[in-house]
Image 1 (tube, protein in one colour):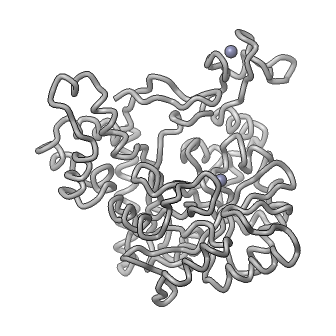
Image 2 (cartoon, rainbow, N blue to C red):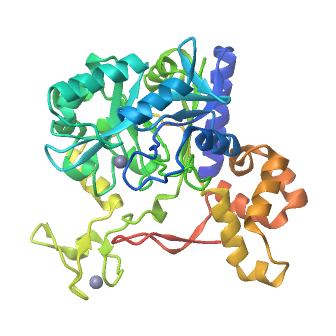
Length: 419
Ligand SMILES: [Zn+2]
Ligand SMILES: [Zn+2]
């Protein structure tokens, strides 16, 4: 019933988008990536490889990543072509983007989107002139509050929203109990929120304070590999793939908006449930709450306990007591096609049949179905089934949201899907 409703809702959104606003088109968008100048990022994270992977995936609009880093900014300016208010190269549209960490209370990450290179240069100058950061890293750390950051961002006509808002480290809800507490007077300027790998729409929409925020799912890719870039993405209804159009989509202006979020099942995340890092035991919050305080160590083994994202959201919703009312587009759970193929290769059923070359199969599937998003999300299952019956069975379970888990993520351990 749930899947049926989701399918009907997504068709309805598409119908309204195209009949009422015939000039609109759908774009699959990933606006949170990092360049090779960020810590822990692949040295091969460059524009040609990003474009190549975007074509494989079926992503039409990418964030540039790290646009406040001088060498990367220079590279972007000399490579991207401007068409009207859009930037593009090799048939992929780009939005000028960076991630910034504020360090006044905890470490909080924010995705920043810019209308133009001059806007990015303006923010660079303000940051450098005031000594907030030397901007030597791809993801700069600024010694200012999130409220101050959003003021600076607004002054250069750019947009800011929390990155991976629910992860237990480096996120808004790790450091603050509400969006108002985080962004203060500027909370109303925050029109989008990145769900991140550890949350989906169903979880996040329990918080009424987010009713006016558009939820986006982006990859936070540190490499251009096809199992990283675009592993989460957002399908927008827009006139053209530009910053202005995306900004209007966050506010749902004249038919623009998000029609679909796609990403990992949060049960895969390392901190979905509350659990122990040492013995991996999962706990109900009630069982480890003593005199109103949650225990910090595991009653079984004494190892460190970490409250899971699911419980964190539940506690915040209880605390606020407000009832959310936003209508949200559907969220589809999936994993990158390469991971599905690797899991199929590992599965006993496949071992008995012919050995499978994952890379070769991936290439063949892309040639046959044009891109990965088409295979995972859009192509009729009957078409996949003709040549690839085992894959169609797996995809069917993903599309019906009927995936089982061997292990649900907790205490810093990734969840494990059963295929
Ligand atoms: Zn981040
Ligand atoms: Zn334990």
